Image (cartoon, rainbow, N blue to C red; front, side, top):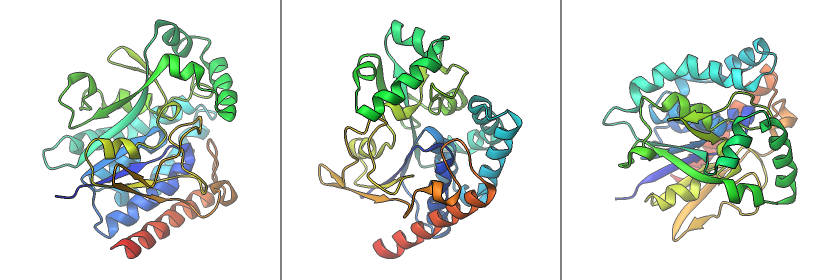
Length: 286
């Protein structure tokens, strides 16, 4: 039996485009067997997994802007407020027997030195350094201190399992970019940071986990890379598993949506653009 996986990319407020695509799929009953999210796409991917992408809708992003304004653009507080608002509903439905599989990617910090740097007062400086390294494709620090960790509702190993007890911690950890998030991220007392450092869009990972077809939803109009360092593209296939990529037609910044700030009109326009691209994809491939 064929199984469909939908992988959603990171992008902070640009994730509103991804949400539009997921809402279009839901409205057309284009359901997946597995959903995978990274960073800002985590909560909206979880909404799609429980068939509530449309119900939550654009209001999710209006709330995020409101939380950002209330916190003085403190991204840690903004994300934590979103989790507080939506996690109770998600936890009530995500772990029921008939709910599709949900995977959340995060970067696990695997060395004591890395834990000290990422969770202490050096984190913001390190975050800025890593952005410079990313622009150069220099992965030395990441390769030494981080590895991809997939929290999975279908995992049999306790250390990999996504469940109601760790969902809130995982959702926050997956989003924590060091340069702009000031609250450390721990899951079961182990250090984690944003998925994007090692996995910006878990499309190949869904193929590796057994999906026979994957849809990857990007937040940028150009190439879709596997991580922040842009040294490898998300391919159009992996070992005969097709990976279809849906991307916006323009940089969402032109619509009024950037990574850490957005206008209300921009959010609405980007969300609608995502809906249109999602419907276009279903028409093309159905």
